[in-house]
Length: 113
Image (cartoon, rainbow, N blue to C red; front, side, top):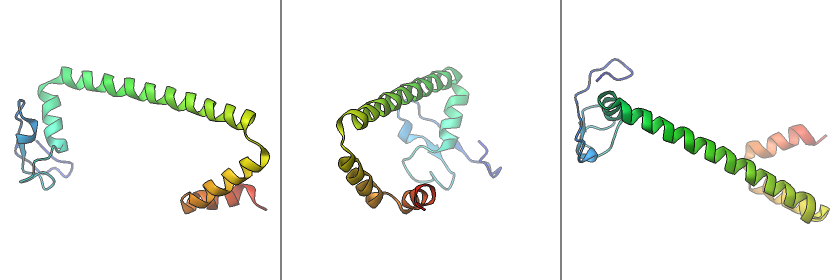
């Protein structure tokens, strides 16, 4: 197998025990981890497995997007129908306080004079 830097690596796949597979790349050498070279070789040898894996990833992405959409709608309904203005103000202040600095900076940039 060739790495992204065109180095040649020796890769041996143990289908029965994947963690026993071997690659002499710097990331995996002498470690019981699965590197990208092992995965690439496996999918090269078993292309149907690659197709099945890709379909599973796409299905999971669709499910996750649907979950995010439903969650967004639920939060929006809650904010509009159940929270008072003081509750909203307190929640926003708290969220900005615990958010990463870039979120706070972005809020100031867009909403504060």
